Image (cartoon, rainbow over all chains, first blue to last red; front, side, top):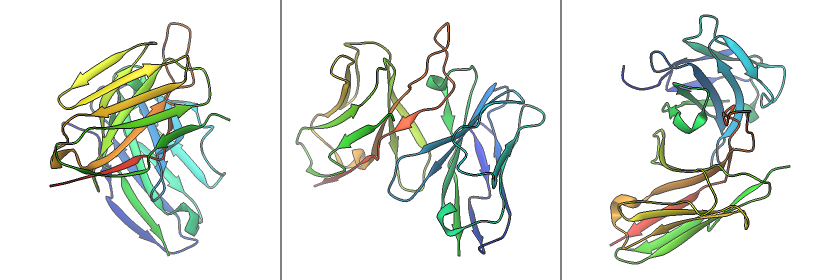
Length: 114
Length: 117
């Protein structure tokens, strides 16, 4: 596709369930970013990959959150033992360089934990 | 802790009117971004401001950056309904040697703009 694709678009999880959110970046994009956007708030940085290397994971809120990009393309954000406060839209963005100035955002995955 | 504050958070305008959205931030940075977000949609990049005094215009929107005052403004001229959306400013607090960024943008809470006929 032409843009950043995220799946699923919507996910409802029972508290305690594990979830996996997928991001397909624009083909050839070097950098990939994950952000968390709570309702009515601005996005908050979670983690950053350059190719397969996770260069910054300082925004991951707890050790229940884990992200990977094993082949430098598709990325998966995994949340273990989900809690209600994890409910948010998870945004993925990719960039052809190491610069977020040129990043394109996906439509996000809306996670609701019940 | 870096803070990015937008005001107002909600703005209801009549078509044809002018207004300004303000974005204040609390640390030194010369990289500021404006995004637009429609409900259920992705973030769309509007402006990238990379130096003090930078001014950019696109249609009815004009953005400026004053790094000394740590202030950016998004000015709306003669608003139309199609501009209804949420507008976010974001600051890049990091700079690698050579000017790259690691993507740790700090966003404001957003300004929800509603333009009414």
